[in-house]
Length: 196
Image (cartoon, rainbow, N blue to C red):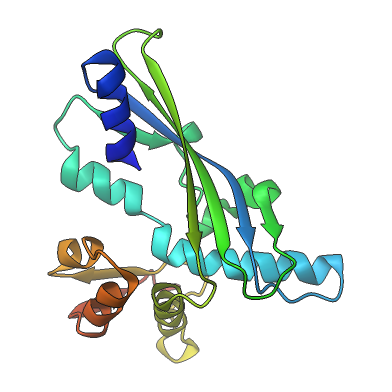
């Protein structure tokens, strides 16, 4: 999303944007079982938490690995990661269910790139569509369960962190199948904050 929005900005202004702001405009999730409104809210939150396990911290990773010590900045709107489970209240109003079971989930983004002057702006809309049964989603959900095991006294409230030597290779996967194969063979260490 970031590179495509920068390419479009460059095509228009013949320069790269100095500031890029990403906004999550809507999140529609399927397979949220509910008999009443309260249960639907809990089911939506649980489904979204699985996505947060995968998406949380990705922008910070990009900032530190790719944009550190450069003049370019990329941030979420208001500077808060909407995919951090601690910030679920920020995105709660944008979460909706898809009535049809098994239909692809969808997250819509707006990327606003700004150049040297306020007149140099380029807004690009993106839609990320994925299966509720996607391998990556289920794999990261299993990692979260591993990280929140009561036997290890790890707080279920703390975000899950994984570290591995070949994270760049994992992120560069070109398909879900390739990602899943690499995820199965990954040498990683699960980390989390321990409760005191």
